Image (cartoon, rainbow, N blue to C red; front, side, top):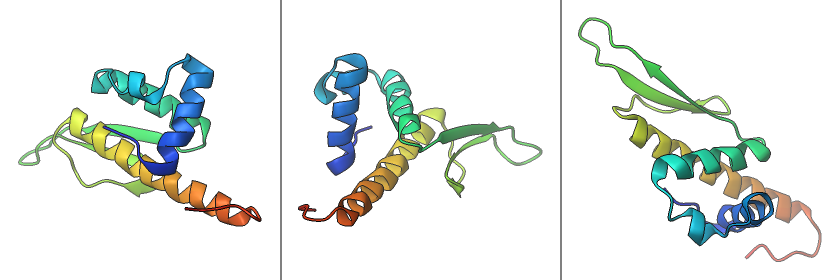
Length: 111
């Protein structure tokens, strides 16, 4: 469970300000703990991650799903995998948002 590109840079600024910790230190945490910190970051930038558990009925096995900005995942077997996929999707959304914000600013380098 890792952040990439502009999202990673933005997260590190946020985590230093809020926790006094750099990305590499937070990345040493167990995934369940890292997930909580990442969710706090994404909440702070308006990307809300929801995870739901759905009991199976009859022949349908129980499953998890994530929801971010009305984008829903496929059915996923474990909470751990659901969290990982949700963070990856939130990272993708944040990177796109940061690129768009940078394009809108005059005289900035987007590379």
